[in-house]
Image (cartoon, rainbow, N blue to C red):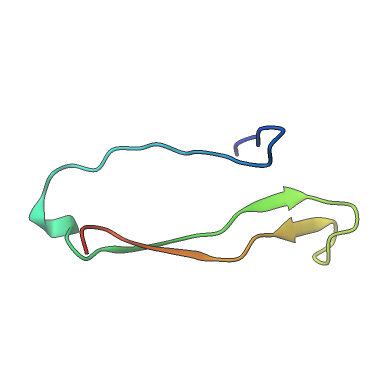
Length: 55
């Protein structure tokens, strides 16, 4: 779980090994936050993000 900056942005940095096995790998991400007015029982979700490695 990570906290957002006051600008409502968050950066997550991580490294991937330099291996051909990761070429074309697709990752999916979704963000969420506790929100009393949220539509999912007090929880709000971001739009999904699809990431393709080395495409």
